[in-house]
Each structure stands twice: as structure tokens, then as C-alpha cells.
Amino acid sequence: MKERRQYQWSYIFLITFVLTGCEVKRPSAVMSDTQMEDVLYDYHIAKAMGEGVPYNESYKKELYIESAFKKHGITQADFDSSMVWFARNPDVMTDIYKKVNEKLKAERDNINHLISLRSNTPKESLPGDSIDIWSWRPIYSLTGAPLSNKISFVFPADSNFKDRDTLRWQARFRFYNKGSLNNRCNLVMSMQIRYKNDTTVSSLKKVYRAGMENLTLHSDTLGGIKEVKGFIYYSTEEPDNTLKLIIDRITLMRYHAIDTLYHSKHDSISKKEIQLPSSDSTKRDSAMKRTNPLNQERERIRNRREADHAPVLKKNLKMEKR
Image 1: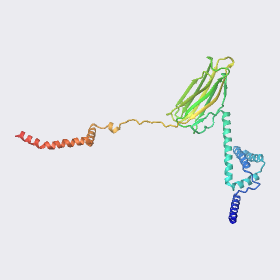
Image 2 (image 1 turned 90 degrees about the horizontal axis):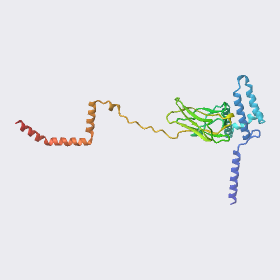
Image 3 (image 1 turned 180 degrees about the vertical axis):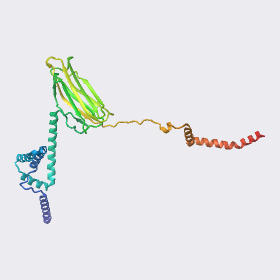
């Protein structure tokens, strides 16, 4: 019993020694995973900024990188020595770069969104069967006065658009202190799809009261989409443009078709059958009759009857000659 306990304790010590020996030992001078992640994030942003400088200002590349190191209180030598250790431990380095890439991607998407808002141009749409591709302001205020009476957009199609896509533009309309328009106001909502073959499909709606309004356009046979356009026009004859309009909850949904088109087969006759001469047609009909089992049986019965009556017919012929 005592020997058994000693054996168990020895086994436990052996496992502990193996697990301890397998742990990755990190020198004190090497940065932690979190610190290395933050440094690499700023380091790659500094590198990207340096790539855009002209040749005669190439000295700025080093300044960008030095500023990233200075932000985290390290030097180039500290960074290089840590990179040597991480390069010898690729599993740890891979996990760090996964997090760095996620941060860089999120920052890139945010920058693209800000650029699209500033230049009033949409960024590339996201993939998916049902996606809101609206990339402009989420809320507008129109007064009916010049320069404040229209919203318009142009969305060029990208690789995420597919044939037979459906577009639905929706917005909520609200009026200051009123629930509907009078005869002195005019509000129009319009959308147009232009296809690659230059065919256009459009829809226009007049809005008379507050609430949600939408326009939907789709086509099954026009092919790929080239661009999507739309506008909201508001005019009023009220004095001093007192009836102001608020437009919010704007979405431009794109839906991919998930079904398939059904193409029926056209009934047609072979050209050979249409242009067949009359003699060939007769031969064909006779050939079909010969190959028909019922016609073959009738032919055998007729031949048998003729064979049975042949002697009688010969005798009658002899009698007639006499």
C-alpha cells in the first residue's frame, strides 16, 4: 500500500514537471501580449501613413514610426528585441495579429464611412441577401426654400449587386405642428434603377401626410444593375416656409433573389418534318404502318386469306377462258 502511494506521488510530480517545462518562458524585457498588440496597431498605421508621402519627404516615414514608439514609451531596440522573441513563438504572434487585424479593419471601415459622408459618395456595399446600403445622413430637414428643398442620391452598383436584385427605399416624413400637407405644398419621392443594358425602371409617389413611405423596384429579366438613383423634392408656397419637413429612419434595402426563373420549353416541329417532300412523306407513312404491330397482324391475315382462295380463283379463271 505504501509503495502504491509513493508511485502515485511520483506520477503527479512527473506530470507537474512536464507541464512546467512546456510553458513558454518570456524574458522580462519582452513586452506582454496586450502591450505588443497596441504597439503593432500604431506601428502599422504609422507605416501606412509613411507610404503616402512623396519621395522628397521620405524622412517623415521614420518620424511616424518614432512617434508610435514614443507614444508607448519604448525605443526601436525594445521593439526589435520583443519581435525576435515573438518570431520564435509563432502561435502567440498569430493570436496577437488576429486582434490587430480586427482593429485595423474596424478603423478602416470607420474612416471610409466618414469619407463617404463628407464627400456625399457611398462606400462599397456589404455582401448579403438582405442589406441596408444607405450610406448618407440618417436625418434631413427641408424647408421648401431653394438649396433646402431636395434630397438626392446616386449609388453605383458594385460586385455585391446581383442580377434580379430588389431595391426598397423607405423613409419617415414628419411636419412641424401638422400631420398632413395642404394644397400649397408638394412632396414627391422617386427612385430609378438603371441596368447595364441602359434600360431604366422608375417609380414616383406623391406624399400627402406624415408617416412611413416606401418605393420598391425589381425586375426578373433586365440583367445586372448599373446604378440606383433617387430623390425627394419638397416645395411650398407658405409664407416664410413655415411648414418644415423632417425626414428620418431612411433605409435603402437590397434583396437578392433566392428563387430561380422558370423557362418553359417551346413546342416546335423539326425542320426536316416541315420541309419533307410529299414522296418522302408517303414513304415515311408506309414505313410507320409496316412497323405498327396491329398493321402487321392485319397484313398477315390478308395474306392468309389470299392464299386460301388462290386455287378457287385459278379454277374460275380457267372456266372463264373456255
